[in-house]
Image (cartoon, rainbow, N blue to C red; front, top):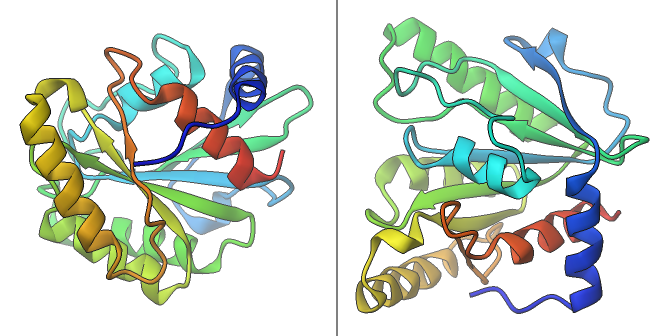
Length: 214
């Protein structure tokens, strides 16, 4: 699990995220990406992993990121600016796995994500969200391999930790940490979170600021 950040870093991160956080744009294609003027932190995860809830908890908002009605239907990269002036951007990526869409559309999403991850100079870290109730699945491993091949470092973030008994959660943490060690671009330390209980949110905020260098 990730270590405790210094109290000063936690307070600084809380102040930043309690300030300006605004939706910037949705990019259905690479040509619509904003100019890479500030560091970007991307959020990736399976459909229904709790990505929108975590983004809302991280930014202290109720609905800055809205979950799609049908899992797997979000097709764009959604950019949110943080700070006044803007010091970093959060990028909500399309959910992967059991997408309710035609095969050609799913392939187009994959190509968008793959190209963004491999070629975006402003991308400083990706957070790969994993549902604690299920642990790593093959679609998560596919994303991890993609990041490994791109030499794009990432953090594994377990979501919905409040939905498991303590003993079951510890087992999932151990299995996930062991597997993370076999991936060259993965941070060895995990983040364990619950958007509902705000568990691990302070630590994740501080990690995002550290990754962005702000």
